[in-house]
Length: 201
Image (tube, rainbow, N blue to C red):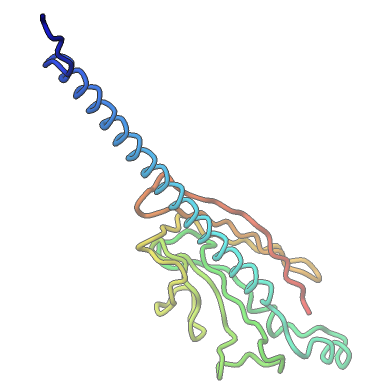
């Protein structure tokens, strides 16, 4: 009597191996796709975080521009507001950067009514230079070197930073346009335009 043998024959084994390899290749492709998608999402979140950080810093600092500690005292004594600090608000540019890509101002941080350079320099500002956003150091002008980066040009490229000033009787509206993208993924970018109102007080 013939005994039936159980097991795989060569063709069955080859079909099983081909099916297994197809599943492994599909899984590897799916894993690579998910990993790439996660990296892009992480990069987009990092850029969004950088945009929020820079925008918050600009809003906070620019709100303080023109503030003076002796505004009321000067107004009561002379009948005219003190313009020592508000007159320092100006826009400009560094080198070949676009017009309005630099803003300088003074802020009375210690409320003494005088623009001090010690212990903290009250002459402040921001500018675009070489795809980086910089902050003013030691009262330098828009055209002088020696400002400090507040964005990392190895991580983010600032493609636009412009300010425009709309001076009114009691306020100045500063319109800021900011655009930045990732250095490693130029198709991931963010843009923001906002207005900071500075009260002359």
